[in-house]
Length: 265
Image 1 (cartoon, rainbow, N blue to C red):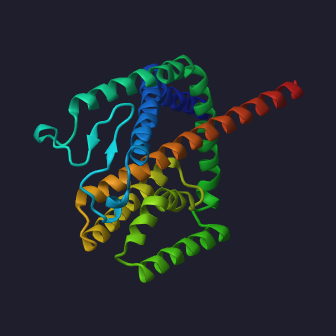
Image 2: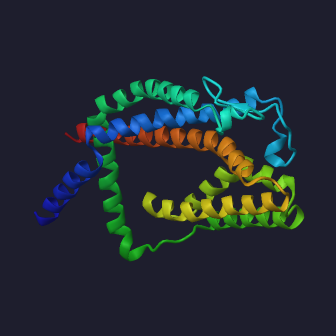
Image 3: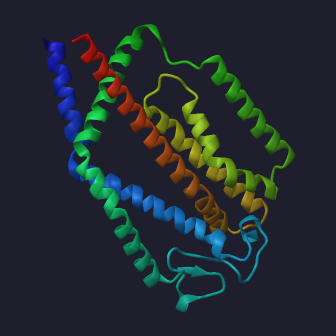
């Protein structure tokens, strides 16, 4: 009985901290805003005549960004301001309007989403209890091979390209993928522990990009702009796909469990 009572208390605490409707509303809104931020980042590659400034080929004009309305164009001083702030405000309003249906949907489905998360939460507790004494955190052979390969690729890139434009291109194009691989390789880690791994690795990779940019005499803000433009769409796609995959798997697992219970009865 105490164990069952503890389980109920944990579930109630989980719902109080994680599963309220306002929280699901904010999460849905965040998903929509992330999607719109990705479209803004991608708009640079559509609106701009060239992308060379991201790797040091400075051009006075020909670059712009903004979705649905343009918020920045190279060479335009905007009256001494960095960007067109009124248009930024309008784009934010558009993003909020587009995000509202997603936020409303997640709020309406809060009960179903909470149940899926509770099932996963209980599974993690049970798995953690079973693994805590007999199965320490470790890398599998396959994970070690992948980690070694990734490390070898990075070593090759660093030794052959060093402070070259190709290094920035690799960081822009493959940075999020490499970070996800690094965070996902260790087995039997909670998502919180993976975030702990991911955050310092992200800042380290950004620091590497800035150092390479400085060596190539590329402006600090251009390197950060390149990271935003290239990483935001990749991160958004990865986050949305992973989230949908997790919820689909949880839903299937729940349906299978319900079917098995019905068959037993």
